[in-house]
Image: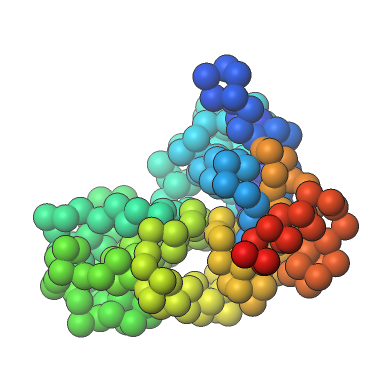
Length: 246
């Protein structure tokens, strides 16, 4: 296996006093799906945002496909183009059509012709199940459809890894499944993925490994079976007791 993402001794402090992430090390192999779970405010999203330096680590290293993002000599824009990121909010440009949203970065960052970018855009819209929405504007779409456009936009860049930061938490319950289905399909197709999510069903079915984070540290990690059914750490068990019995 070759390592696609490696976070090494990551620390992140906000305002010099709030320790959001404390000495976290995580490795994600090519083609692996790693799901990060934990209580709200546990630092999950900060860890994820440090993986493409949206949050700059206070100390530690972040490698994407062997390149250290923290190294001053690294061309961050170049590396970021290889890292797809899907947020809670869809971050689509409201004044652009779905297709324009998807082709923009392909043209600007990847230097593709409009024709190439549109062809790739249609391929990814088909993949997420909404090719007929190519000429719609974001406001004409449901939240679930907008999130699928955001995923298609990331996929169109042909990233080496996809990061998902609670991609379903802003959606109405009936739309969550359509987004998770797309993610499950990506996972089955061998995409390297790191997902921060509250969707335990997704973690059970899609993850190769589940990482449980609490108070900014990795408490426990293992296969879904190990973490869900045979958790060793009291904090992990306590977390599941709280969420699974409510």
